[in-house]
Length: 420
Image (cartoon, rainbow, N blue to C red; front, side):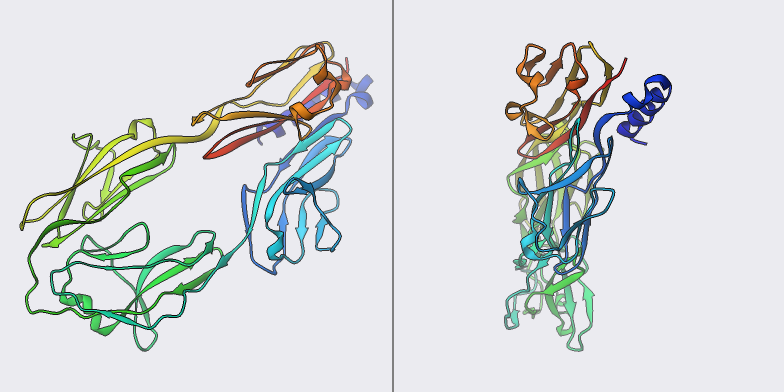
């Protein structure tokens, strides 16, 4: 049971305890309990349901907005489930993409869901291309490019080997054969085994939502020479020199150096020993930080070396910012007439979040609610709204949105006045 459901539960029993006024007091603003995820994807032509359920008395009515405008139901494809606000799209089309929001309304206010990004899943095919072949000398490095086609949601890129009989097997990655974060395959030093008995290397792009793959052109590697060339460690690919990490998420850095023998990769932070809780994998090429915090910001150094030359080196600066997250999240308030009620809405994040208030789904500055234009309403700062000497006409639903360039947090909560 979440906080809002608990609040409604105890309100119900409070009202039951006031039997003489039960029929009068059993009124409260709507409160959305079930809503869609922030990002929703759909397959063209399939049906889709966007859930929306709310409590409230009288029972709320529902409506949906798309891109800020009330949804048009005229073509018959959009239907709301009777008794709730869940929206069924019987047959989805590309034009259904947009930002959707569910609103639940009764005479005491309007509760609003988050803004839902609805997008159609898609994966374009690679353009047709003839097979190509590379003939590097043994010991030289080689990079195979892959430019993934458009995919919604974002696709995963892997490299595979295909035979003339149509069989498929994955490329085995290690510190000599590795993939960068942009999908390219790097061979730090070509060996005879990279011929793979004539099998073709292909870039495979997978959209897991659509359960669909598409394949790039066939690439053959035909090594030349009798003995592998010995080569010093040299820069081949690294993460950008300036990397942004987000608080609470996982951040990975990668450095790939060519050379024969295969270079060893070591890391430092601020030119000092790497913290012990960082994970280094793929023969030292990849550095992983989980649950990123501000302490992970700094300068990271990766060094590639082998027995055939000087040290190769790259420096990567990590900056840490944050999506908004709640410091004080506003909650439903049930109070009596004459009381003073304050709602606090404070969020942290970097850049600092911008706070915006709404009343019954309308921007605070645009709302016509009478108390907002009286001396009984105080808004001393962006994080605080206060209602003084409230009465039964002041019931309402409020929303607070805290946003920055990385995202937002959204709260929907009500002010309910109980009969004395």
